[in-house]
Image 1 (tube, rainbow, N blue to C red):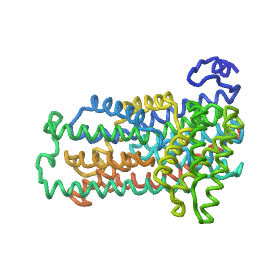
Image 2 (cartoon, rainbow, N blue to C red; image 1 turned 180 degrees about the vertical axis):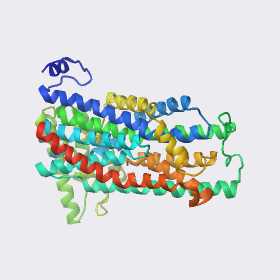
Image 3 (cartoon, rainbow, N blue to C red; image 1 turned 30 degrees about the vertical axis):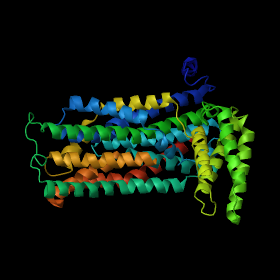
Image 4 (cartoon, rainbow, N blue to C red; image 1 turned 90 degrees about the horizontal axis):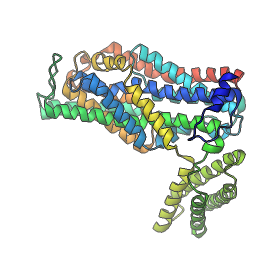
Length: 475
């Protein structure tokens, strides 16, 4: 009772009035602390990969490398957009979840967060590079399965899960292969002895240009890690806000009703002039038109909690139909109509896919601070235990160039990837190109592979069990 009273008196101007009481208010603040904790752990668990190469090639001392990486992780989250964050949220049956009491959403959030933090901390303790992305996605699938078991509904978005699964599966294979090819080019074509040099002694540092290259690649990996992994924290925070305060956060109230109405009218006008003889295409146009009418009718009541769910669902339905129209070969659109629909789709997407600036700032700060704490265990594994020899300059730069490119591309496509597995596979690829498989540490690679295989099923089971457990006390 005392804790509930104290929390109820806390002023959070950016959230507005919090209409939560009793145990739900306590759980809300626990969830906020947990998502900050998840991103903090993510910082020292995953970002250690970005600084391992500059530390072990003596390009930067840890005292400089860690704050430098933390700063660019912060900037990566802050300027990276929300495409990955929204992609993560699409794994959950969010529309079904919003129709149930807040306590059910609380069970889902807690199950996802605690399962993710538990596995991340466990693998960090043993110094095993493990993917926070795998853990989070497994947690979301497990919690969704628990929700579906008790409440039915649409369940896990398996199409989105497959899309994310492919990106997580392919990215380390790309990392290994491209790094091996790039390393082969350096060895056999460039034949640069300075790049292939292995630093010896604490006072030996790379030549200036190589040092700048290594610092640049560390910077890029840190920034793109923030823009990809950091967004997952933003997605989690938005899940909490939508689950507990749906009327405020299910849709973006910063976009005026007039602007939304203009986009819906724009869509409606284009649909009316589209001519097609294809029966299926005609049905799609009728369906889209009905969805637009429904969204316009719900617009005036979108601040009401019950109506907010329906309005959000109507807008998402319009966007889904517009994507289908754009991809339908039986529907011929003029260039002007294509631009008009694309513009309307962009504006309507912003209504449901958004994150307030303070949510991004909170995650940015948590990730940046986390980068500066507890980094050493993973750095030692990356720098010393993947290969049987010390990293040379070319191996460090190659792995980070490939990692930065892969993660940056994935962020642009709105797909989550594992920084851990992309970078560690890049180092393995560069090591293999330098001396074949005998140059790789089999035991370390087995541990990394085992963690890669186990993370998804363990986190799914753990989140499922935790959802059922929390449901007994909260739901």
